[in-house]
Length: 138
Image (cartoon, rainbow, N blue to C red; front, side):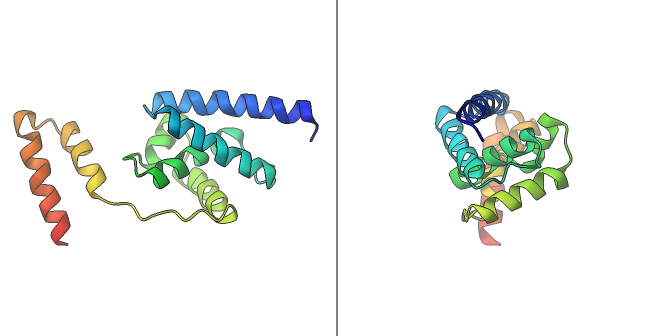
């Protein structure tokens, strides 16, 4: 890959990462981390033969998992209009090949998010705390 081609690839990836992170309301730190994962994937030739949007989304999802944000794989799929299995396959391949230890998902991260979506009004906090206590006892 020529230097010009590599720079163009980096520029396009940075733009796509920035756009997707904006849609998912992720901060600059997450953008930078995702871009670093993308550079690692490109260096190891893991982007060849894969759709650029899927690689970018997988890099951002890896970032979300390592940073412990409350984003689900399906959030990315809905935003990109792609299948969960398609993006999941890319995510698993990249995380495996890059030797990234992906922590297990803590279900407590999602309780407050979904409690807000269920519109409990003034009882949202109380419902969230009750749900958290239930999950912690499991």
